[in-house]
Amino acid sequence: QVQLVESGGGLVQAGGSLRLSCAASGRTFSSYIMAWFRQVSGEEREFVARITRSGGTTYYADSVKGRFTISRDNAKNTVDLQMNSLKPEDTAVYYCAASKSFYSGPYVYGHEYDYWGQGSQVTVSS
Image (cartoon, rainbow, N blue to C red; front, side, top):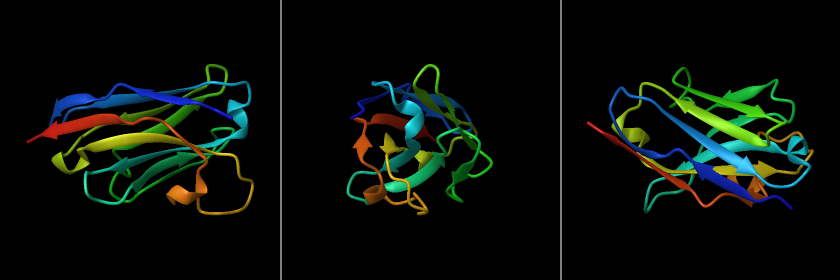
């Protein structure tokens, strides 16, 4: 089992940047596919980005491609989300997620992930 704790959220003006970090407990962090999702109150949770176990491959939602970068450090048990050129529509609670599965799924759906952090609020003002 792994516990995930996000940090780094906050308030930023449109066009600005924020970096979210997710710290994972346990000794098997490198065995998990990691992802970031976000959710606006009253709406469904939305996939943002994911990264493979080695960190060699990343995948992004079209809405954030070219602006956000996901990365991981398996030695430090962390996964980060660098968010640049932020827009008001990026405002949401951002969640870190971990999947222990090994099937060849897309890993863009919430049900594909086993563990979740508590969430970190990101607010982008116009």
